[in-house]
Length: 136
Image (tube, rainbow, N blue to C red):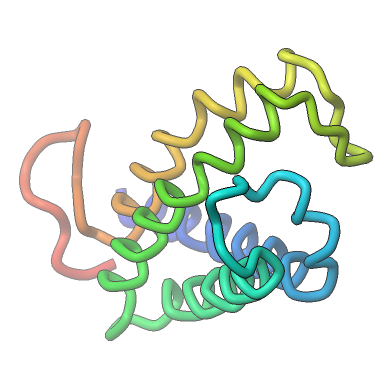
């Protein structure tokens, strides 16, 4: 199971590193999906990108791994409203298609992404039972 956890951690770290760089470098592209109630939208997009980069690096750092998993899980929960806005307001962000074939799985996958962060950082061991591993 440690090999699976390690692979999942590497995949998640790569995903968040790429996403973080995109959020920082192309922050304007993400502005249309930021909910209207979020103040200073561009600054928030850039800061979320920096958080993604920090989380990606911390996930690979044994002493920070557990905290990184918890923070990335909370992050995925906090950005979920942007995914809903993207879907419900039919916002076109090329090359992402504005179709429910994209939006429905994306919205449904968010809880999996939250679990993934917690699992690959040894916070939870569900669904395999037992206590979370102390090392990975």
